[in-house]
Length: 304
Image 1 (cartoon, rainbow, N blue to C red):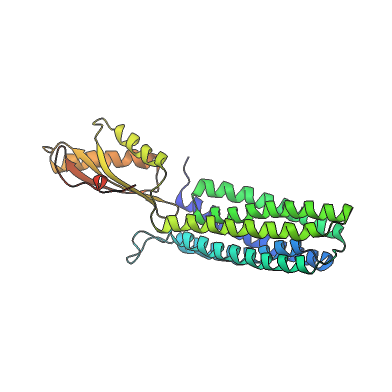
Image 2 (cartoon, rainbow, N blue to C red):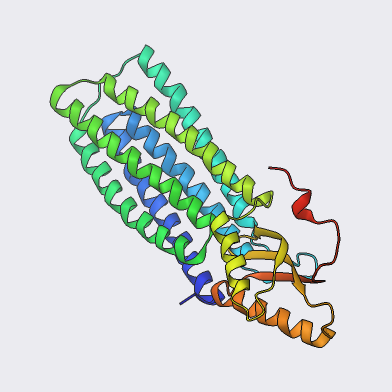
């Protein structure tokens, strides 16, 4: 059963608050790890956790803005504030990756022997477990609420899972075989992955801000839902977009030109109700066309 707007907002706030709490805790833990081990890989993870704090704060405030009701100046609502927060997160991730990449290159030129890797291992294992719990919760919330900001935050922490696991492997190798250079190689690999992840995240946010069409599966779904109406009316010029947690559908519906306005309006409302049964939070705009009317259509103007 779909969530109400109030339930979705509560879940998004809980997920955003949890990420801030975890980011602060992990930053403190990993700072201890850097102090005791002098590991560049642990340092890269600590810097990433520091950026997580900033990114999670941005996400939290973006969600507070995005759940505000539509106003006279913002009649589509504030949902795209989440996409803006995703762009900020991408910036933080990219900056972290570049910093670690630079430090890694310098460490290759001037190697440092790591100390007390056992303490570093326990810190990274605890970090890994806590991050796994958070990501599972965030992905659950993102799936239910369709929140771009929570999804972006989840993606960020999913990278942390990979980096934490990689750092644990490198610390194990150093602890048992004293191969110190693997720490630097691991850190450089993490930085490259962070930069790539920032690119992917920013691209998704830009797609939302530029009103990229929703997946073909959703578009096909709209055609199928309209076809369920007893009249099985044809539709054209379907346009879809993500408003930031809620979808918007616009299309023209073809009805008998001899229908009176009241009846045509009733049929259109019935079609709208069919769509709202599956997409209850959607904004829907339907233009009525007489069947067979000849006009210039958007479908014929679009390019691939």
